[in-house]
Length: 240
Image (spheres, helix red, strand yellow):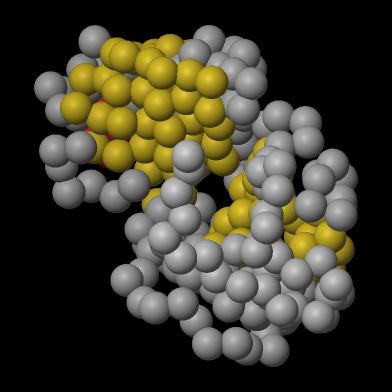
């Protein structure tokens, strides 16, 4: 059995299904093939499974784990079958399809002006511009798919101005990282620039995947538009 809640306008769906222990397909409800799937066995202790369409040349044969630093590995989690415009595939393997277990899958496809899922090649320099997103990111997740290293999260709410040097780590329980010259990201009008040389975001010759979302709020009243960074923090504000 599977249940789907989808918002095709924003390219997102949430899928709940029960594993069969055999090769299977599950509907995702999006208008196109998912480019990102984040999946978890709700009753098991297995890793978070991640499919990313720009992970490797054949992403359907590979996977990452959101809660580990592991590089991409060859797994049968997706039954070596690429997602289609209607379903994603599951292999006969416990991480994604243990018989009788309940799973949750968060599926995404790119929406022009709102979201983009892709990859870039690290160059270990202080200037590695990633363009073509069609928007300035508000929320960005990076992972070096070629090597071990933390997943990193960057956003324009914790750090509204450029450059951004304070990161969070989905695979760790750590507090946000202290500023470091080797881990710096700049948000640009059509993408972002990696300005740090750290291997987890800019390893030379490595494939680094990204997940980027735009800020679609109509207004952000607490941001200083003068460029002087005199932002303020709202307290106890509610809608009326």
